[in-house]
Length: 113
Image (cartoon, rainbow, N blue to C red; front, side, top):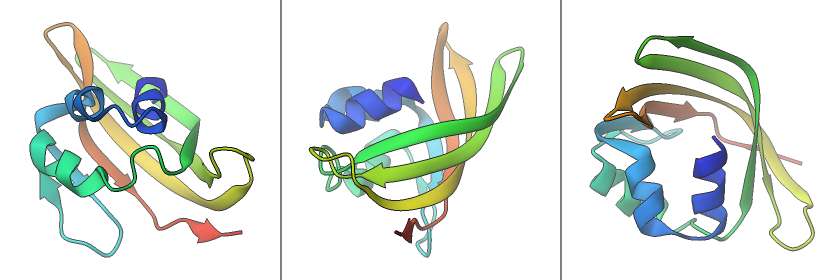
């Protein structure tokens, strides 16, 4: 998730969009599923560069052209690194033209600390 974190922190919309496969799905907490990297960018762009998101994978499984990862994440203040909330996430990756892209991404609403 390092490339995701860097694009998020740097508010790099084009890089962020292309981390997701063209037909990717996200399942944001308490919202309908969103499909397609353009639609995912539209949904996420309001948060780009506003908080740091730190992922701590608990497990990563790679099998051929597909990978699965899950773990914990924290939202942090950009300047102070103060933890704003914590939660859990899971991501399914696929290999597209020799580049790993997110096919499916789900997370829970961060618990405020």
